[in-house]
Length: 156
Image 1 (cartoon, rainbow, N blue to C red):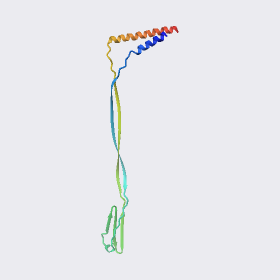
Image 2: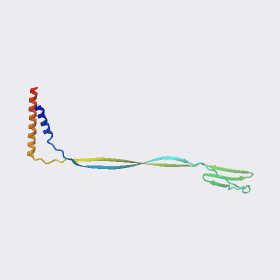
Image 3: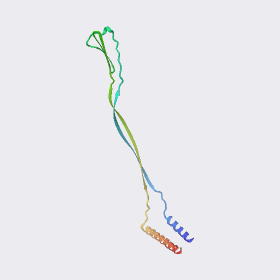
């Protein structure tokens, strides 16, 4: 019983030698936004619908002339001409192909957040002679523990 009590007293005396003090520090937060822009170019072809046209001309107006009567609407052309007893009507309707480039603009936003925490542990100035006395006390406690363990091991 005395040995257990002695060990507990030594344990409490060793662990109670320090005191807890609040640690001061600072915290730095770096917030970075990185924007990257990417343009993707695609080639494409647009095709328009063919259109139609019409013209009304009285028979008396159609004569034998070298210049035909022409009517245009969008991408269609109508030509009317007469040669002797024959009437020629030509209608050309084309679809239009347009080549184009489509530019897709892709914007990426990346947010990088980093935290840096600095802790400053204050160390109280201890004079050299107090440090020597603390070392002597610590060595003395170790010697006493060694003696007690040596005596207790001989009893077992």
